[in-house]
Length: 51
Image (tube, rainbow, N blue to C red; front, side, top):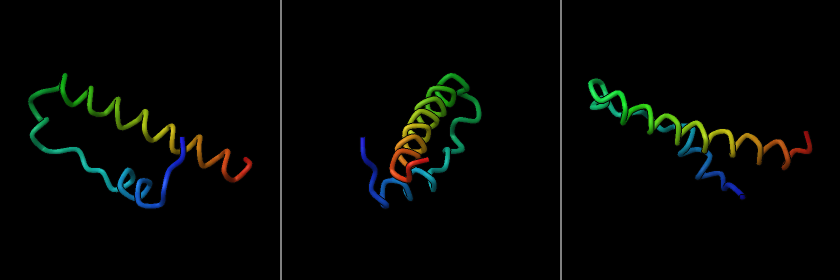
């Protein structure tokens, strides 16, 4: 998978909405998805840089 600069910027600037304050299950699922995308982005960057 490849990432563009815009996709990386969008991922890093993602903010979790305040409406999840009382719905912990939905917040948990959202955070899991965000963390998975962030990990994929970091792995891609490491391969790209040859680290």
